Image 1 (spheres, rainbow, N blue to C red):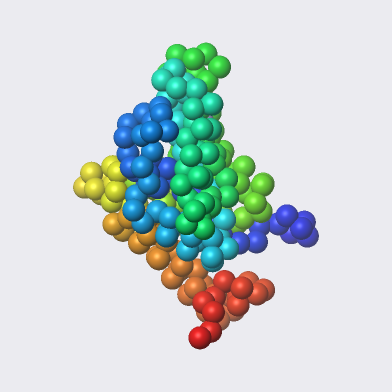
Image 2: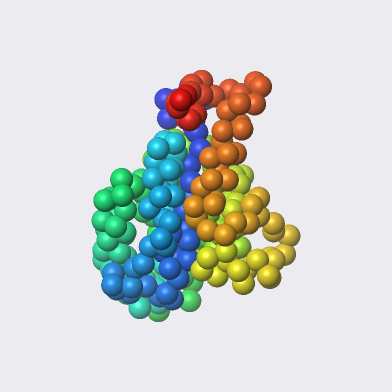
Length: 216
Ligand SMILES: [Mg+2]
Ligand SMILES: [Zn+2]
């Protein structure tokens, strides 16, 4: 607990396909990247609240031989270039390239980083010193909610992408902390939740004013 890198705040673990950008199946070309119309605003609001945003995405298309890691990196640079003019940025882009049934040998493994495995959250905890118990996942699949359960945070299901269908077919034993229409509503829910934690008596956060709305 005395380490300067001890966990100290929330992060958002953000799904990519169907959540930040439109779901198009295996995304193998940057030309197929389409942000939702509200995505820039949503990311910027988290940036302004100083909550780190870590994208966590399963990209088994790499293991399946549909595209390479270089393509995924290019897609992520392209997403960053679409966010930047709006003053928005994602702090880190993590992906799992694996699948146990993949045909590319080096990636055809059972790993701990494919969601709902927690490997990539553990990487974020190391690199950003965030507290998973205070953190949030946002995604359009039950596996995104399951990731939150696996790390002890809150899970939000959005109705974009596969979300509407997922909502109609609840996963066994899983329920989301919130089900909302889209990413911008998820961010509003997070900011309200973080704000009410800060106002709660006995809050242990040292500098609540840093994350509160500016006084008028
Ligand atoms: Mg998704
Ligand atoms: Zn993996």
